Image 1 (spheres, rainbow, N blue to C red):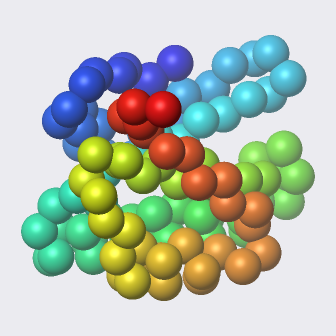
Image 2: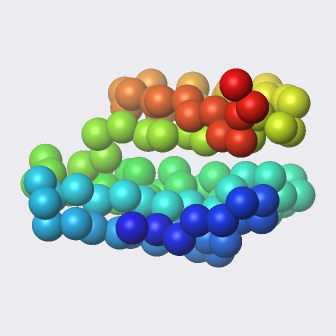
Length: 102
């Protein structure tokens, strides 16, 4: 569906990838491992996309869960990330640990 790579983020903007099978849509976003100004801008874009989708009348177009990817090799999960996730109190959030050596 979306491009993948190891290391650097290759998604530069919010992209929707839809499959007709069971009406599945993946919304891929740029990573948040940027400077603070860029991170805040991307967070606002994500918030706006979620509002847009959840204002849809068609339930199949709403966001049903969020997969939040955390790079295990970064060895940190800061308070700003936690606060960003907490704002989605009406949408289930799945924390995905990436680049794990387990």
